[in-house]
Image (cartoon, rainbow, N blue to C red; front, side, top):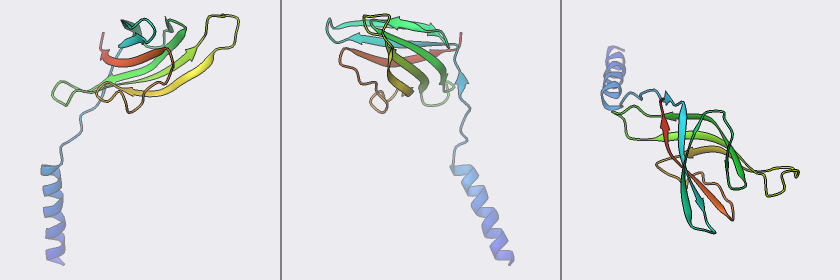
Length: 127
């Protein structure tokens, strides 16, 4: 019985030494995105506050949350976006194009699929 307790304590100490403690995410106040118009090949850097709709071409997107890792951690930015395609006819009903998380380190993991536009997360800003 004593050996079993000693083994459990040793495993717990080893796990706490080997496994790093995950740092908390830092909430951002603004997000920096890159928009690509595939027709004209123009790249635009877009900065917007959280929960403020922004237009890029026929797209209207809102960033609901963005967060980033502390400087001592591997760099990563994440943002939850809702993107609508309003089209050229503003009286028409907008079509949802993308809703979900985007990652700055791996843009292909959760990419928006659109024939004309491409949106990529660059970073989240604390101010």
